Image 1 (cartoon, one colour):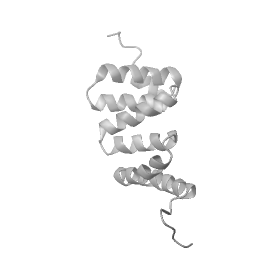
Image 2 (cartoon, rainbow, N blue to C red):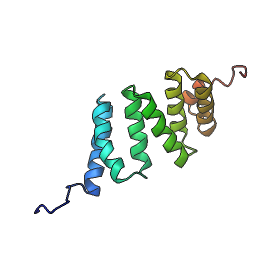
Image 3 (spheres, rainbow, N blue to C red):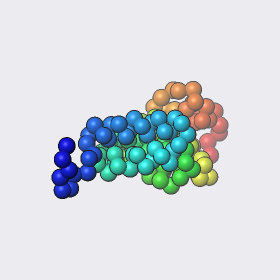
Amino acid sequence: MPETSGWTGRTPETHVIDFRAAERLLEARDPRGAVKLLDSVIAAHPENTAARLLRARAFFAAAQLRPAELEFTIVLEREPDNAFAHYALARTYERQRRPDQAKRHFRLAAALDPNPRFLEAARFDDSPS
C-alpha cells in the first residue's frame, strides 16, 4: 500500500490487535508495555470502556495508582453497575491508604455481584464506621 500524507497505518483492526496484545502483556506481567499499546487504542477510541478498564488494570499492576484511579472512575461513570470496576477501584483506594473510599466501593461491588472475593472484601459483618 503506498504511503499517503497523513496516513499513520493505524486501522480499527490494528487497534484490536493492540488491545489483544496488551491483554497478553498484562498476563505476562508487563503492565507498562500494555499501557503503551493501549494509549494509542484509547486515543483513537476514547469511548472504548473495555480498553480503559484494561489500561486501568495495567496502571494498577504497575503501581501507578493515580492513573489507575482515574481510569476506573471513567469506567464507572459509563458503567456504574460494573462490579469488577468498583472492586478494582476499592483496591486502588486501599493501596493509597484511603480506607473509607475503599470500603464504599468494596460494598458496591459485593452488592452488584455476590462474588465471594467481593463479599469477603466488603466485610459486611464488620460494625459500621
